[in-house]
Image 1 (cartoon, rainbow, N blue to C red):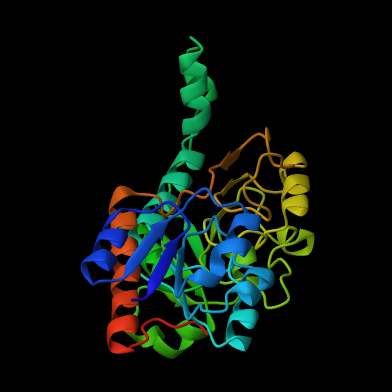
Image 2: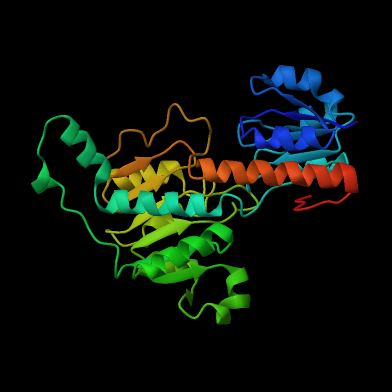
Length: 312
């Protein structure tokens, strides 16, 4: 009987599906790195979200591990090279949290444009700061969507329906742009100059470098805003901090960080910067979907030797 470890908190549907298919399950969400290294050798499968970092050291100790499943899309927390070298399949659940992430991106945009965070704090403090809280409307603005995967596609659709002009930066989009006549294919340089809003929905550069640094920020409009709900470090935090302090751009909303969990950061406390703790995909609905998806994929692997959504 295969034995699976669920090392991150997720909906209980995953455990129920595995058990109902005669797959043994341990749910250990409080394992330290040392605990995981010490115990990983007894498991045939490992299911994680974003908290567990599946390092080379862990993989090398995982003598019986055949499969790692990510309940979500991003696999930055898994050493894919080591997994491949050790013949371990890594699979994710693309699309499961698409709508949740797109809606959170919209929420950040609207909150930033309408100064919701400041309005909430000042009102709670007994201030009636109405005259200081004049916001902006998103209708008629130009949006640059960087990346056209599931989330980028969903966010673009939502924003177009709200009256925004949508520019897409994606090599993949160029191949299918005839199917999306409402959007305009563009490149990063043009988006930097034209867009009022730049939203990231892409993978990081292969070398881990930021896509947006001071040079790119200097090409942007002074009233432009940046939103990142995709990956940490797509926008240099140091350069973004400098840009906000010097009013080079109007604001930013960030859900993902270079180092997580983030308890100290140079962006903390900055005016016109909204920060959330990597919660774009954290809705009850999305977590049920991804937990169910990854569990069913494990069942298909162990019972039918079928691999679904492999990233290695």
